[in-house]
Length: 135
Image (cartoon, helix red, strand yellow):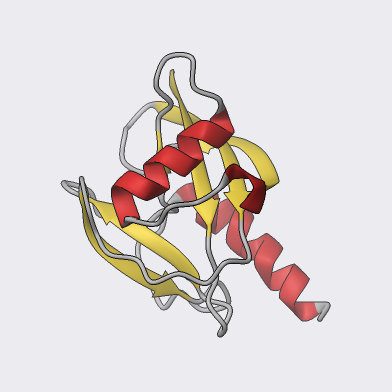
């Protein structure tokens, strides 16, 4: 089993939807983010990747750690991801850059059959639904 290390950022809009991206050559929507460069921390990777993929310039101080999650990768067979997920309260307008071909806001309560990454399906969306239900 291969393991990929990645960092990702969760953005939500005023309706509670989550910003997701689809990368070139893939089907599943996932959080923006990617693999760290040598010597780069998870936080530094998240900031850099969001800048490259969405044109959104973040300051690391805006981000809070949500989870370190390990599970199946969305687009690579026989591969797990070791994912560090951050969140921010900043509302953003995002455009697809780099390898991103589509940006989509998805409601965690009803993703209406959208193909989403296992991390969203198995962890993040259920957690967001629980948190939203407590509000």
